[in-house]
Length: 251
Image (tube, rainbow, N blue to C red):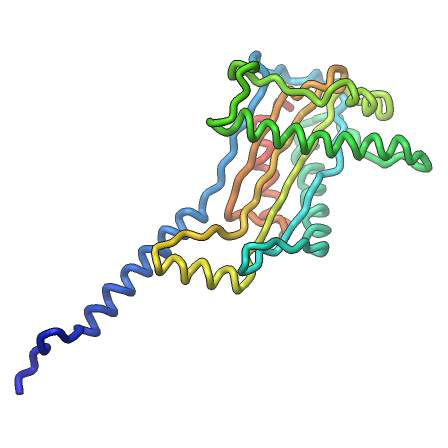
């Protein structure tokens, strides 16, 4: 009996090698895609001048939420991760903006004045809404607003003057961040679908930051962050996120 392979039989070692190479190739593609961090900063049609050294910059409380991405694609809020991220991001903002010799004012909620506190909270929510509109109509290439003619012209409106009155600030820095992390089940599904040649998204970090002129409410600088590798749950990776997000800020 010869040692050759019978007609129609499967050469198992060769088939296994081919399959393993395919899986390795797909995993390398996934790793390459996951190693992607992108930013894009915007400003008015004229370059935003650096605020005067005497300008007072109000550091608004960062709007941050972290989630667990389940196998089914649903996201579950994680209060513990969010609390840790707020602490890490707050420390990073203090360090990084403070290192620029900016005249910082730390936000403090009004004591015993629920109406003023509500007004400040509404400004944070307004920043989220305007920021998402910028992502949709300015950052994307398919939903631009004809009336803006490609120019960066966005504002929080005259309501922002409330922060100038309450804190004596000239500008306010707003930060919005959302981050999700794949569960073990989601990770297994990503790998399994990759073997079949089908891409499936994992957790990702998205956010934006705005420097707002409180006299007018105009956004004078805006930066977008997308990442699939940065992590807000740990101090040093969170600092890297903020370093990336603040690139180009005129302070």
